[in-house]
Image (cartoon, rainbow, N blue to C red; front, side, top):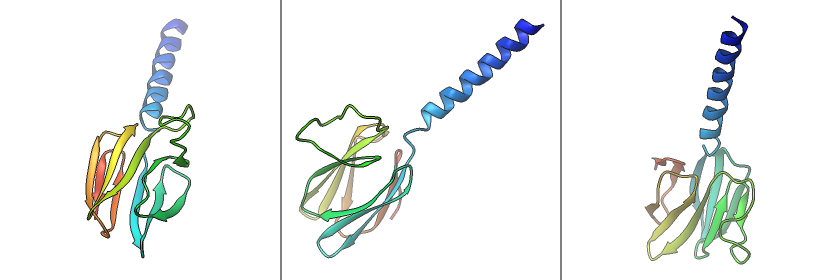
Length: 122
């Protein structure tokens, strides 16, 4: 009886750990604009609010900007990464790691909210 109970508890624990691992890359970020700067406002799953020149290309993860001169996919503990680029009147977010989308094309100067699954609202 103890073996059956111990086995059941082990499976329950493993299921909980697996579910937590699956949700580590959950985030929610709002994009807005101030003059010629893009502003990323973290609403969930990251620890920053930041702005930079809208013409700049950057890679972001849950901790902020990634130094792409060193390594595009850093050897860190980040659960997700994506890049931001402005091309003409569009902004392009490309999923690199931990997101279910490969690319989001958005209109420049509009506000959007996105997460690891894609657009949440505009």
